Amino acid sequence: ESLKLIPLRSIVYDKTYRFHKSVLVLLGYFIKPSKKTTWQNDLINRNGINIEEGFFHVKFSQLGAMIDECFYDSYEDIEFDTKIVVLDDLDNSPVAGASVVIGSDEVITDTNGVAIFSLKNDDYSAVINAEGYQEKTVSITVDSAPQTVTSKIRLDGFFDLTITVENDADGSPVTGASVVIGSDEVITDEDGIAVFERMPADDYSVAITADTYTPKTQSVTVSSDDSITIQLTAL
Image 1 (cartoon, rainbow, N blue to C red):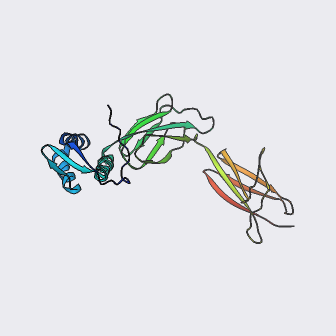
Image 2: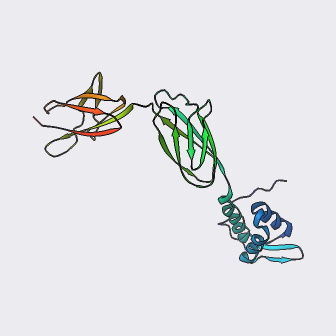
Image 3: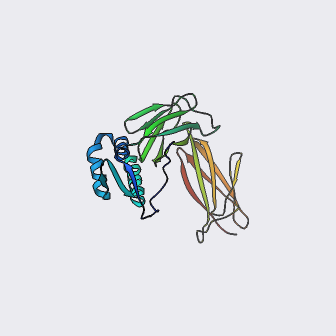
């Protein structure tokens, strides 16, 4: 029969169970092979386990604490597969041949845009570079489980422009304003914000109209992701 391990931390019984000493030896050897003797003795002493004639006696509540300790203490040494999927932000197509660097390790994405790392529990930064694309840094947290992280990267020379439209009298947001750049129109949200995505680097004219406000036109140069505020005067 297979041994099923269940969370026992919160279970408390006075009944004492009798296990062969080899079970404890196996636990210690399997979880901490490099420290098995010291680790086993420390575990025995710390939990007050009574070893007698090749067997050890332990209360059910103690067994739960031991199993918790075995697993949680060993997590620091376990590596989990972290799959990073790199996609083009325009059409979600995979970006093959991208360099993904975490610390001193570099993995090149395959034809599916996938790079796989084996990582221990910790926080990491993954730096992604691909020819013709802007560099991107992604934060990753490994928390005792495999995971897949999807990151979308953008071609060089394309940027986001965020425009906030305000009332020039009190700085309150102008909701529902029409913001036009070229042939593209975006209506401001409840915070007075309109976002234009993937704009090629260039000089643009921004035309803004809103009910009860004087229309306004303003020039803007896009050369990176940027945010600007434009104020309107009430009629």
